[in-house]
Length: 212
Image 1 (cartoon, rainbow, N blue to C red):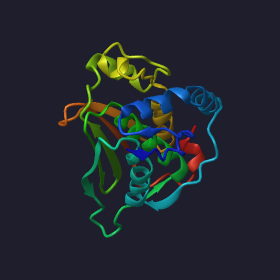
Image 2 (image 1 turned 120 degrees about the vertical axis):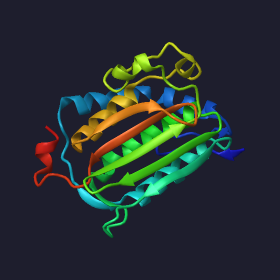
Image 3 (image 1 turned 30 degrees about the horizontal axis):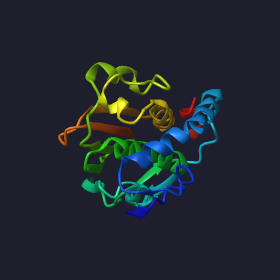
């Protein structure tokens, strides 16, 4: 087992090699997430959109979170940069997009049996990130409210196994909304859930207007 390097989520001195540590971190951080969500609901923060390398941002999240589950393989799926020579450069609010991706990867690690896969595609106009796991998945009847209902608890094995709640997903939805995009859920070919973020490759001239 290896020491859990999870300061990005919470301070933790546990030695871990399974999902138990991830679940413990998430549960202990629930009060903090409630405060974050309350602040986000009060209004839009100042958004500082910048051109960043999406591959570097994803690599950073993988480096931060992969050690939480030594028994889960975090895979790089299809990494498709832009075809116009811009590579993986996109215009985002890096702090908040990092938080959104971090939430989704952490969620996948909680529920995965053995695999998490991260993919991205940059098209002419839009960007997409897909985060998949091979866990129990989410029942289709719960998809509509998953991103919109804070603290949602699902009555299935995915929730019962680790006491899941939907607060982090509500924060993800709010962040991608500020980017003019949307958050999606579907079934993954790995057998579990696939969460996706889709947003414009370039932001409006007045970023603050997009957040309203």
